[in-house]
Length: 205
Image 1 (cartoon, rainbow, N blue to C red):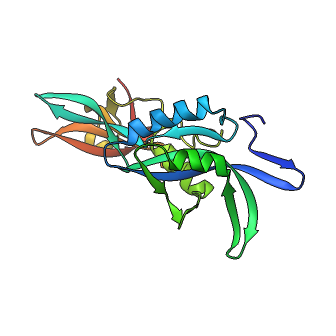
Image 2 (image 1 turned 60 degrees about the horizontal axis):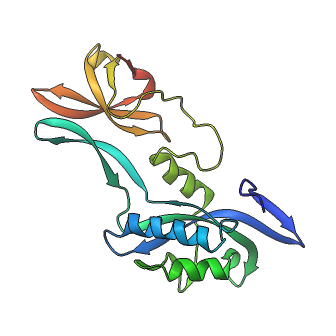
């Protein structure tokens, strides 16, 4: 089964790729993601489990008088997993069921405490929820173009074109791809302060 296939019809069973959230012990997010990738590969489950992500964003922090990029977890103790799911109707209405072998492997990986769902049944994110979350970490989840053409990067120097800060130079601290906004570190009253702008209110230096 092709990994790029978004939906497959086979013997009247409908398969879809859906994003799920697994809960981990605090501080184990990256170890869980790395271990899962290795296990999925070694057990030949790559046709049922696809991307495994720790939701993070890069932000600027001051360390020893310098602004440096550091990763910040959006949701500590959670990891995103993209899995093949069977779309089916159940007592609660329309739902999705994951492959039992893939579920077992993920659930029994060291550091994993369970799936987000009802009881032992994982519940996927809606497409909108997954898209919004992925956009926050700069990943295109559904092979569509970003809504906004934001061509700056975190840490890059920019010039502000908005009247109140016209021609002031700053450094990009955060990028919101979903809403087309950029936070820029500017000197305000002698202190570096993050100020939010529309993406078209700044330009590269």
